[in-house]
Length: 450
Image 1 (cartoon, rainbow, N blue to C red):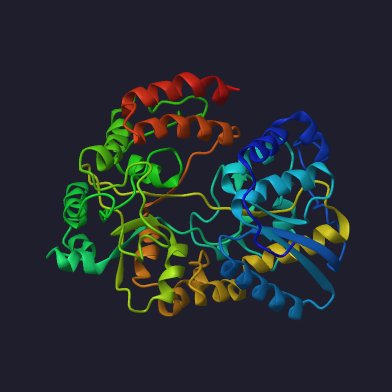
Image 2: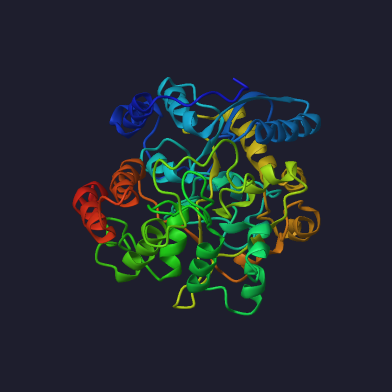
């Protein structure tokens, strides 16, 4: 199914997610998670034949770029045929759930970080350490420090996923015209001077937000929740949402977490620099149209900007909190091999997994401006060749150890839904931040402990 397909209904999506959580799903995936054999499931089989590769794409351009890399793989491996299945992210999990439940999983399956704890717990995907240890052409040392993250790729020291690609730190893209029009120093300049702080950020957002609804131009979207963007603000304030054992929600009692999320709520209700729910920002890309002066996102957000060479934008790191801390939170995804894939299909799947992490594959992604690099041998190439402006900002985040992983739990889907429901009330001005966090604790703790 090599097309980007439409989003499923909420009912269909939740039905698929519920199916994933049941024992029947785990049984359908094959053997339960347990002590793995020392040898890989490929044994001594040689790669060859036909396999399926599943991934999601946020645009047809991104999918086309991945398919172009696949052509290169086929050119180098004439004995292998890979059939690519891709869809948009919203539909992807539901489709994968149905394929695995039917006993026909793709041999190489891209898995979002949010799903990894549950997939490992349920035995959906197999351990990859035997593949790694048995393959002299593959080395974990080829990757930058922090590329393999606990609760994302590794679990209790065992590896279940190989980084599907280099995950981008969250940075700020900003419309330089908005700063110039208001006589403001650029965020990059303030960063160099050590003055790019939360206080400066709020001041700038206030100055670049102009007009009245329905034609008002806004500063930035407020970030409320527990996904990476809100966590970047929470962790920058030394906040904490989950206990160390990930079994309880502690954000309701954590002053730093309350402060960070209150700042985001204030962007809407106090400072009025973030659009409230229901605000119509007009058609198309609201950053390119000028209705938003700044966006917080990863490297992939640069792709639409390449179509507008007249649009002058900058890239800056997040501001530091009053505590002098800056953290940018990521959720790196994985290439996995489902449980039950054995023999030649497993050996072939491993060859594709390796290729997806290779320098050749990453160069194609870098050239298209769709990715960074997590390989030591590609850092210089990225800095010199990426069409993304201020590319150094992304690598600086790693060099300065600002990058950290989001805390994940097996019940993430249900947990995030609870948080989303409560934070929607905050965004609408119906509930105070501290009250919403108390509600999350009351609703989510039994789920997390289970």
